[in-house]
Figure 1 (cartoon, rainbow, N blue to C red):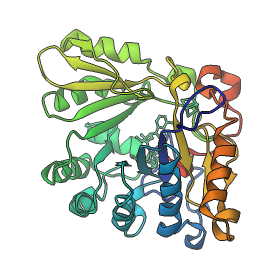
Figure 2 (figure 1 turned 180 degrees about the horizontal axis):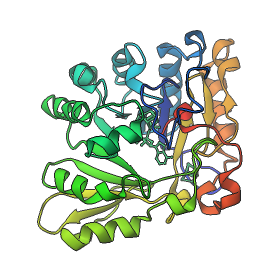
Figure 3 (figure 1 turned 120 degrees about the vertical axis):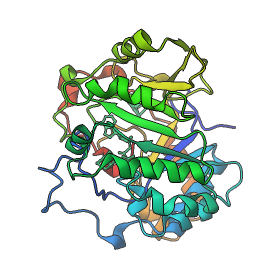
Figure 4 (figure 1 turned 135 degrees about the vertical axis):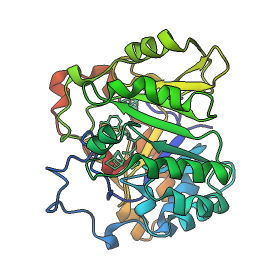
Length: 334
Ligand code: SAM
Ligand code: SF4
Ligand code: SF4
């Protein structure tokens, strides 16, 4: 029996943030002014061990989790993350995915594939060098991300999803060129509306480019038509090019919220569960994990967290809620 929350949404997906650190400073996620030299990241000893993560994943799989996404921060910065992948891949019936900025993907792709990773999503906000560097804010070149995508393709990841967060006045001029670049490539480009995650990215509704506008820009040059959802709770609306050039996705969390189908639970690097990306506090499982709690006790605790869940932040978002305190996305993962 799936574990349902108060609004009838089953527990299906788990996002595991394996580190709060990142080597990029994307202004919409970890702005330099806040996450600069003096910012205190978690000490290593505070991170859940691979054994602790795998134990929780196993218990959650028994409670209905079918898909795990490793994220962060930048998941490839967690040492030996492929060992964690290998451990998670032993759990039957799970699809294993990762979202990465691809800065280290050329080096890691083969090891991740060998370890049993099923899918990979790469974030890439612009193909124009100056725009991309402005967005990652650490002078990281586009070509190294493209090299990472190529390496992942060569070891057999397919299709690769490419995430592009669109911010008005910053990279909306890159929508069409990025669409053209990935048209016919076999990769699925997904446009994400800029969200008010965390409390540091200075979000304003005026900076959001609505999915409808993005679709119109693409459709004007490369006609598209809608596709059916793959499964309940899929975050992206799917479209395909009428000329057979493949598929794109639109993640319109701001203008068309999808909370009513949200089946995602998030695990922080140090063992807190968050039932919403826009949560304020998590439910700390460490006392149980590091105490002598049995698997049954942990399972009961997880059920007690999921059952009363009534989160629907994106449906009630306003300029007032945008400035309320929230957990940072780099801490609990995208
Ligand atoms: N570092 C990895 C990466 O960037 O792919 C994984 C973590 S990142 C938090 C996960 C995803 O969240 C990325 O695709 C990123 O672009 C997206 N993201 C971060 N901040 C966002 C925001 N304010 N609005 C929309 N998407 C955001
Ligand atoms: Fe790092 Fe990903 Fe956040 Fe960019 S979006 S700062 S790459 S965690
Ligand atoms: Fe799920 Fe919260 Fe996002 Fe709604 S706002 S889709 S409940 S994570």
